[in-house]
Image 1 (cartoon, rainbow, N blue to C red):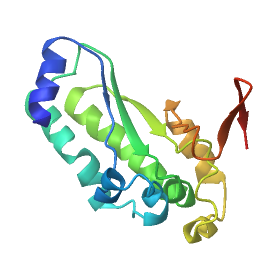
Image 2: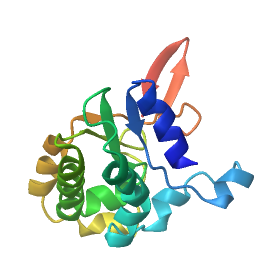
Image 3: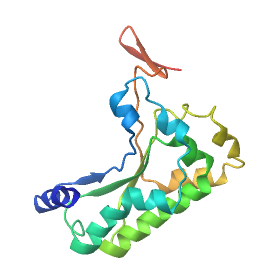
Image 4: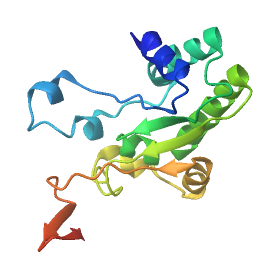
Length: 169
C-alpha cells in the first residue's frame, strides 16, 4: 500500500512529507493513554532506522521517484523527544545518515524536519533525560534539521486558552 500511495503522489507531481509516526494499539483504543511514546524509551538504533525509513528508502532505490519533481521532506523523529534529546549524538548521526541515504538514491538531499511533542517540556522528568551531559551535540542536531514542527495539544496541559488567547506553561 505504501508503494501505491507514493506512486500516486509522484505521478501527480505532488510534494511529499514522509512522516513515520510510531503508534501503539494502546493509544488507538484508550484515549487516556496518550503518553506511551514519552515513556517507552525507544532506542534510536538500526532497528528504529529500518522500521521508520526502510520501506521508504527501498522505494526510492527501486523507482528513483522524487528525484526531480516535487518537494521532498522527511520527518526524522516524531514525538519521541526524551530519547532524541537525551542522546543527541546518536540522534544527529541518524539525521546525517538519512540525508546521505536519500542523496545516494536521488542525487539530492531531502529537507528534514523534527516533529517535537509540543514545547520540549514533556518527558524531562523521565529517567533517560538524566543521560544528557552536554548540549554540544544538541546544538548540532537542531542546526542539522531544516524544520522543527511541534505537535501542540491544547488539552495536554502545556498550552491552554484563556479568553481566546494562547497561554504556555
